[in-house]
Image (cartoon, rainbow, N blue to C red; front, side, top):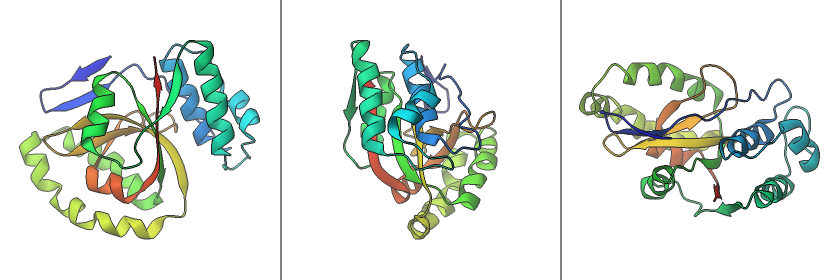
Length: 199
């Protein structure tokens, strides 16, 4: 399920979408998506209850990780913690092996909303052209550290070494299956928790 594109994108496909809905179940919904991708039956509401997730968001990460790990072990798999930094080398290793990365981060709503339009724009450009257009985004990435108020869980599902970008997916329904940001932006909003489900 690793798709390699002519522009240098390497992206995982066939990841099921689960919309977290108005309750703000980003962590349970994202874990459900990952578990189902690994052919492990899961339900975000059951995961949310097990982890004590509150309506409107807020998950006890330890309880959630334990629940996901228990499910994985029943299917002879395990949840593994990666190094806390966001790096293309670490990301590429997991994506090339067919493994999405659970990723805790911070969301600045206005900036995050702009990723959708940017992702549409990059589809019309060559990797060389697009890389030039990303210079401003790279320069402004550091300012994102000023908006660490909204914790979020999403998956990293791809990378592009030519443009030094990473692909993400959010549990927000249609239109959020695949979006892109620079590695500098990813580092700026990194929450430090990166996990994979290992076979």
